[in-house]
Image 1 (cartoon, helix red, strand yellow):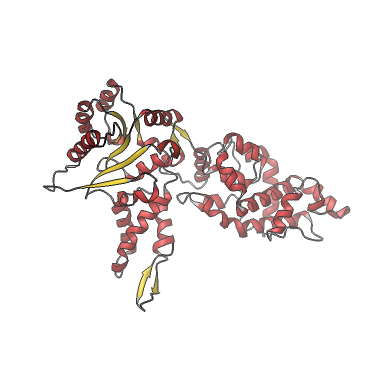
Image 2 (spheres, rainbow, N blue to C red):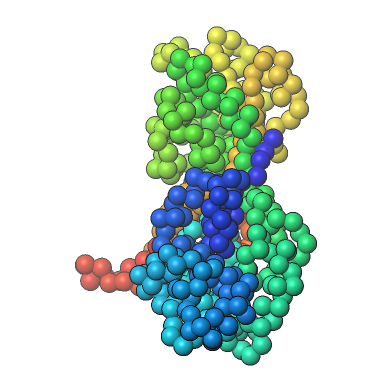
Length: 439
């Protein structure tokens, strides 16, 4: 069971100019504090509010400027405090002898020139061009463009999110800022595109998380044990990243039982989590037969009897571990599995013994980009000495295969443009050339 997330839509709503009390009520209020402290996000927010207000009060504002010699810092429906902050930050929005039409052009120019500063407020997997387009009006200096936007906005104002201006074709699609799912489905849909991995904008239900917290709280000593052949490093990180860190502090260690056939992500996991990691590399006697399940079973028994670990969170979709669970009856188990690898029979067996289980796929994967990027760059760095003569597209595919990272073609191309295409030569302190990555 999953719920929608708000990590993408919250900064978008803030930059659009939605009232803080609305964001605080139903979006991710924990992100709001960070946004309010970000000068670039605030600048775009204030500029878009000015642009929206100018649309709404265009003629009244123009009359006050024309006949009463008023300016935006003396007209009541503009936020004077926000104007002062913009001026202080170097956004010179107050102009002498300027009318409404020119102000709209100036606001739009400032938004267009500065919107890219907010790129890092959004996860790397989100197509930034789609977000940027909501703010930057193309060809805005061309005659008639701003007038058309004014007429479109005023004629369809109830179709705009909270009656705040964005550059789009208004549709009767409800509140597009309701959740990440709603927002991204709408924005990507405008480009006949979609988010391939829906786990990026949904997370495990609070009841699932509460069951995990209760299991941890009831344990005397607890460890996470993982079969790396039948689980995914990035999905484990999803789980750990989306659970309350204070509740995880009681976990003494994570033990990874790994085979050389598995991806390279496991090698870098400890760098991104607080829990100590033990990595058990399992050799093969023959290449056709893995011994991970036997080694893991023995390891759990050893930890139970020697280290007095009484509770285990077992991450595996393999029914082979039912023998361990049903035999080590004095230990407590919680099982996490991958949907595509776990059958009904093992779930029914777990339920019959009163053992709680949940899907690792339910946890949000949208905030794991830092980890994935690190793993990909580490794999790329290993290839640097042998790049000459290598096909760049083949290199890209090899990196994703080696690290076992699932990504859409557009996401791969974003990585390609940002890191592979920008590879450059640098002369080191020893006077020799080396290929370096622009991070």
